[in-house]
Image (cartoon, rainbow, N blue to C red):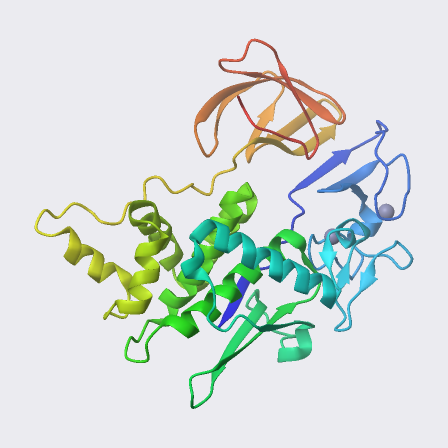
Amino acid sequence: MRRLALILFLFASAIVASAAETNFTCVVCGKTPLTGRIWMSKWGAVCDDCYKLENHCSLCGLPIRVGDGSVKTGDGRFICRFDKRDAILDTAEAREVFVDTRRELMELFGRSFALNFPEVKVDLFDVDYWSEKGRDDGLHKFGFSSTRKNKSGVCTHEVVMLSGQRRTELVATAAHEYTHLWINENRPPEHAIAADTVEAICELSAYKLMEAQSQPEELSRILANPYTHGEIKKLVALEKENGVAYIQNWVKNGTTAALETEVSALAAPVRKPALMFTNLPALLPAALKLDGLMLEGAKRRVIISGVSFAAGETRKVSLQNRTVQIRCREIRTDSVALEVDGMAEPLTLRVGEEKYLP
Ligand SMILES: [Zn+2]
Ligand SMILES: [Zn+2]
């Protein structure tokens, strides 16, 4: 029925610059040049004063200061001026996203994924719609769907989605909720499906759509989301083997509560593993990234994709698709020069920048 996700706080890196001035400007208050303790956000440097501010952007964690161009939602969440450009706060816009998402799912999965009762009422809601404020388990509702069936079998569909999501996240939420509606129409009452499996089938639609739209960050986020208790990983593997039509057909004609038991039955008598996990992306970083810089006199250190280096050191860094040997050649005030095994030219990484290796 609903889509949950973890809220992530995105301050991965801090720079400490002592006497030496940097050329950083605080993206929150505009102070420049910054010295002392400097925090890196995905949008740029943040001074230590702003870092200590009480309110944060609900999407990226950036501190919020009065008059900095951020917006406040009806339920008291803040959205920073950077995320504001991409966040959807308007119901008409959310409805367009839903319509586009539904069309794209149909292109991806075929006409069999259409609704027999195509009318869907779509709305946006604020968090306190479900009195969610004050929950401390880090889980958060992103969307909700319901279908009412009258005596003659006519369905009335409704979807509500959280206001202030980034466009891409709203697309994933819309795909998830649309799939609930399709299951509501197509699952016969005698086919009971486990709750985790229903959620995973819905999340699979979001996954396939994000894959088609080349959104690797969303794919990792969907796989890492704990709320299907791992079922989503099984379904991604199952879909790779058998296709979406297999899963749709199971919803309509299956008899078991979860998909995997039927699959192992089909795989008999040769018991090759029906579910393959080996080709799922691991949750290692995909790209090389300068996570942090420490500039204290001669003791300079950097953190590259989670691994710490001093100048001149050689270490191994594990990425999603491979492990590379890296020598840290030089640490500058806002970047680092690296020698990457197998690359002819040294690679320069700036703070917060990501580079995918060829
Ligand atoms: Zn500041
Ligand atoms: Zn933000």
